[in-house]
Length: 176
Image (cartoon, rainbow, N blue to C red; front, side):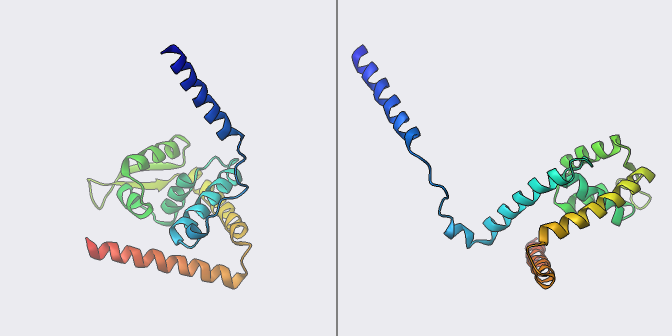
């Protein structure tokens, strides 16, 4: 019985060794996936997020923190729920992001005068300065991101993305 177990163990290790000895293909054939918008958009998103982290490393923002900061800047007295809905962030995750932004002294939360149950978000003076800097950095980053495209292609690309997002948003709203 022990000999059989040793042979089984040896055969498993040999099969494992043979698998490791094979060299992986340089590139996988992703032709079918490259024809699907979801896959291509997801790959582009991952690439852009990786570049975003490097580009914004000195500023210390994640893409989510940046989006929240810019949304608050562009929408005075916006509520937490409105930001969460617009950016498709679950409220508990947004609360964590807001805590970071509050700790850095960029954002304040206050009871809404429109709806006492809601919490409004406002930028502090420091937050406003940082948001202006972040917006300038984002403009530069976006130009760099879209630089492989001509000016006309950039406008068309953003227009097409916007149309796709709006179409799906309308479909979801009609389904509710």
